[in-house]
Image 1 (tube, rainbow, N blue to C red):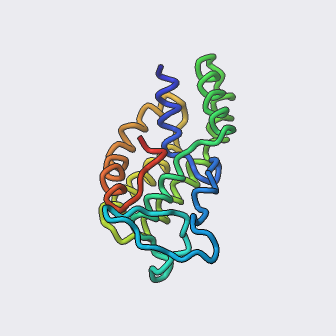
Image 2: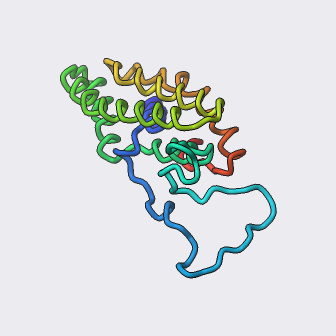
Image 3: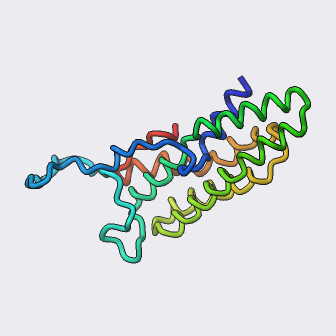
Length: 181
């Protein structure tokens, strides 16, 4: 149970560069040459995939874009999941070299995640999302300094406030989170 919980927590802060994303989510749904029609009434939703800043000045993200960038940064790649399993197994055996090797393999994942969240925070004006992303960036940065897999038990506490903000603010922005539960 503990191993599953920590694997889930590690998954929550893994980098999109190491994770698999569904590229079709970023594909426009309109047929070339089709005329755009008015959206039905109700809350606006974000279609996704427009990370060049769209109509925003200087490449800034809308709240929905920031939510999507954060959401796609959560999945943990299969190789990183294997590193987590190997690290836990090594720690249970008392294999310090195996633990060190697994942590070294995961270090770039957390470094990249911290940078992604910090970069996204710098590109969104929404103060609540900026706070959430900064918090998640700091959690990922702390994970780069872990020396044992037992330390990953702290991740739930480190990511709770940022995730709570995202769960409130992203739906308001028209983006439904897929990877943050």
